[in-house]
Length: 276
Length: 325
Image 1 (cartoon, chains in turn orange, yellow):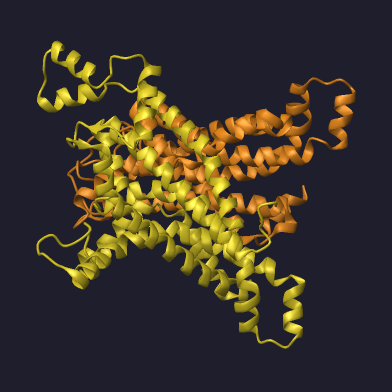
Image 2 (cartoon, one colour; image 1 turned 180 degrees about the horizontal axis):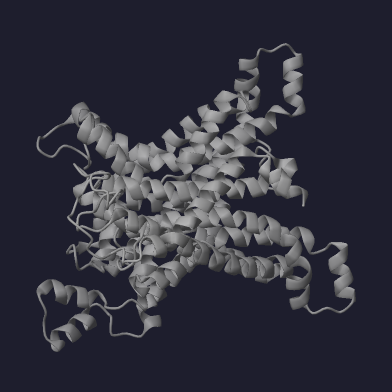
C-alpha cells in the first residue's frame, strides 16, 4: 500500500480529503442537526447571518433556514454527483470496452456516437433531456449521467486498445475464454485504475451541472439543492447577497475537495506523472 | 493546399456526426409532452379540437414520425429551420438575431482564457514548485471549482452594486442611442463581467495544460541545445519552447468549444444577454421545441466550425502534420 503513504505526503491531497470528509459529515449530520424539513418555513424572511442565534446563516426570501438548506443540500449534491458519476462511468466503460476490444466496424460506429455526444454541448443536451423527461431528482440525475459518459468511454477504449493484444489476454484466448469473460474478467481490471481516477473529474462536473440546472430553476424544486438557493437569492441580490453567496461557497468547497482528492489519487497511483 | 484538403476531409467526416445528432434529438423530442400546436393553442388562450387538428395538418404534425423526420431533414438542406410559434418568426431569423452576442461572448472569453492561461502557465512553469507556481496553481484549482453563475452574481454584487463600475446586465445601454465607437465601447463595457465569468473555468484549464506542456517541452534535448548555444532564458522560452508547448492548448480549444457554448446558457441568463444560450433557456421554459432543435443544429455547426479552424491552426503550428499522417 505504498500509494496510500504517497497520497498523504501531498498537502493538497490531504486538504482535499479533509474538505471532502467535512462535506460528508455535513450530509450525514443533516438529519440529526436539522431534523425539520429544510424547505419548511422557519422564521422571518431575510434575517442576516449571525443576527439571530437560531439562524446562524440567516434565512432566505421565504423565511427558510439557510443553514438547514446547506446541510441538507450536501446530501443532494453528493447523492446526485455520486449516482450520476456511477451511471456515466458504467456506460462509458461498457461502450469503451466493446469499442476497444472488437475494433473495426463496431469501434467506428461507437466512436461516431461518442463524437456526436461530444459535438453537442452537454449542457444543451441536458436541457433537451429535461424538456423531454421532466425535472424531478431521478430524471435529472440520470440525465447528468447520460451526458457525461463520452470522456470515460474514450479513456476506457484507449486502455483496451493498448491491452487487448498483451500476452495475458492471448493466453486467455488460447484457453478458450469467451469474449465476455476476457473483456470484463481479464482486461477491465487492468484498464480500470485511470478510469476510476478520472471519475473524480466526472463527479466534479456533475455537481456543477446540477447546480447550474437548479440555478436556472430547471431542476427539482422540491429538494434542498444549493443551486436552487442561489437562484432564489438572485431576486434579493442587491441587498441580501448572502442568500446567494453562502450556497456558492458550499459548491466551491465540494467541487474543490473532489478535484483535489482525484488529483491526489492520480499522483499517488502514477508517481511518474506527478506535477502534470 | 494540403492543409486545406486535410481539414476539408475532417469537415466532411463530421457530416455523419451532425446527422446522428439531429436524428437523435429529433426522435428524443418526439417524447416531449406537448407539441408546437399545444404551445400555440396555449398562446392563443385555448381553442377547440378542430382548430388544433387543422393546425397539426398545416404543420405536418399528423404524419408518421419517420415522415416528419424526413421532412425536417429535407427542409434543413434548404436551411429552413421551421417556424417558431412563440416568437412568431422563422426559427432561422430568431437564431440569427441571437447569434452575434454569443459569438462575441465566446470569442472574448476564449481569447481571455487562452492568453491569460498562457501567460500564467508560463510563469508557473518557470518557477515550478516555488511560490509563484504555488499561488497560480492554487488559484487555478479554485477557479476550476467555482460555479460560473455564482461567480457572475458575486461579480455583479461587487462591481455593479457596490463599486458601480460596470453594468449588471444587458448587451448595451438602451436608454440612449449610440453610434460608432461609443456604441462599441458601451458593448465592450457590458461584456467585461460576462467574459470574465465564462472565461474563468477555461482559464483554469488552460493554465494547467500550459504549465504541464511547458514543463514537458523544457526537458527536451533541443532546449538544452538552445541553452548550450548561449541563448538567454527569455529567447529560449519565446522562440523555442512556446511554439511547441502551444500545441496541446490549441487542441483544447476544439475540445472545449461545446462546453463553452453550454456555459454561455448560464452566463447569458445571469447577465441577461440576448444570445443563443439565453434563447435555449427561454425555449426550454416556453416549450418551443422547434427553436430548441434549431439551436441544437446551430450549436453543433458552431462546434464543428471551431474544430475546422483548430485543424487549420494546428497544421500551421506543426508542419509535421500532413495529409498522409
